Length: 331
Ligand code: KG4
Ligand code: ZN
Image (cartoon, rainbow, N blue to C red; front, top):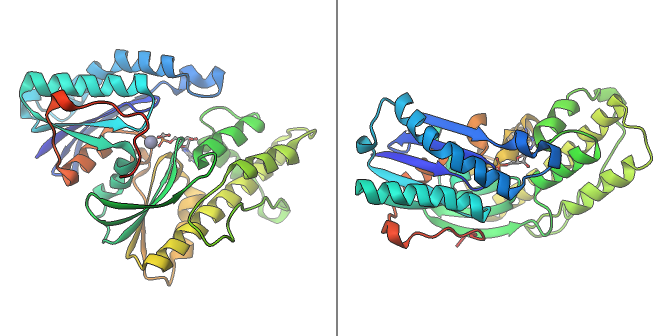
């Protein structure tokens, strides 16, 4: 089964073509991040305008790269939420019109669920599993007992972890998006000289919720009135990244023990962070649980993960009934 997946929930336009939920034939992604840089955050109107401009050329490019025609596609899949309403409408309306015109089925996909399925392409995890979604808009922990069977276990009470990366980057005078910038400068922090220890909010509490706003404020207070010299920035970035990774790992492994799962699957833009990946692998040793991360280009928003999630859910609906849902969550 060949599925064309469309992703336009935030500032990326993604079109992926995937065979049988496994083989990525094409995965074309463009981002309007450069246009948002001077505002240091996504401007919804600009994101949606760019998506209107890029979606059709990207569908053409994905078909060209996979050497297919539209008529070879068995089903359309689209992320219908959560996300920015203007952006979502671009993807939903494009997929809907294509499905209607071609007489194909359409499979609506929850963007958060798709972030978990991004890992399936390299390796199929065993159920039950703990899914951790860490992106610009979300920090959610779910228990997944089978395909399409989720229980939400906890999430952030304030900022998402990606938002914290972006805000701390801004405090440190780094550009947007902040996650890759924090990771880049943190690499320059020298091990022997590190003495910064930021708080780990909620880490000792016996629940599966998170809080990142206090950590961001701790960084802001620490930096306040100090000169942003490059060594200082590197050490602060490292200290923040270390604290964020510690909190994420602690809560995930608390859930692993509580629900005795076989796998952990991490998805979302922040899952591209190498320090975090290494921490997860290190702390999973001797626990008998496998930790899966997606390939880096599949960690950030893309159309292939939408097609993979659609293949496994296989719940098509009449295209006429499909609506964008900006505040969609786990059911
Ligand atoms: O999943 P995503 O591409 O879009 C949303 O659904 O939000 O995630 C974007 C977030 C941004 O906050 C960005 O700073 C963060 O992922 N991010 C990273 C890294 N790459 C992207 N955070 C930490 N380290 C990275 N390498
Ligand atoms: Zn995302």
